[in-house]
Image (tube, rainbow, N blue to C red):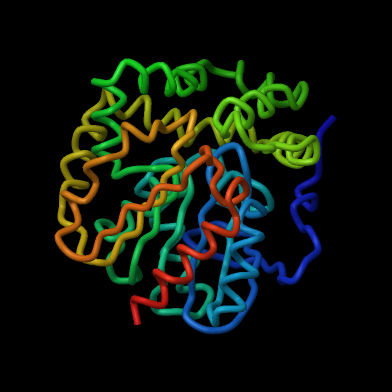
Length: 303
């Protein structure tokens, strides 16, 4: 059973819109008025993971815009463009398409990876960065290569390199997504609920989403053995000249808390690393109030 892309147009205290940016059309959910905060989701989710933070940010005087990344949800699913360079250009172009000169970029998981790269590749539109459940890309790579426990936790990425197999698993049922949601979240919490599994499992069954989602990680895998991978890692070494907030759950089963230290070495200025005790990978939903509070306090401190 396939699901139509309109599935992600969920009603709530936000508005849905489509913007043309970087040669594609992106679905964005918006709430509030004020300085723009662009929210980037991770795998295997879509914009809806930010619903709690959108309400909190709007109440605090910000314009919260949660976009579906290229290939996800209601955004276009072209055959190409799933590298990190294009992802940062997508985000920068959406910021401009929303009528803003710049934004604070906040991401979780894959979105956090993209957020870390914004000050390096798209500094002209990036006022600050917050990354949830994702350290600096060089720290993540080092941990995956040198920490056997993290290497095992990241083995799912190797599974996504197989052509067609992951897509078929995600299209056949919600079991694949359910397995990730349960193994990456805290074993001591109540996430995910049956509703969460259905919501995100069905969203991955929108035509072409499973393939597009896998392509983001296939670029990461393929580029590591091609010249563009080492070149990317060299470029990302540049100092980050904007404030950075890093939030990490202590029970993250995907990006282990022990593997996330050291990102501050790339941020000579304002850097804050906050642990969220008892939460796993999906911080926005496992600890929504604590995440919203940390974000709004940090944003207020930026002036």
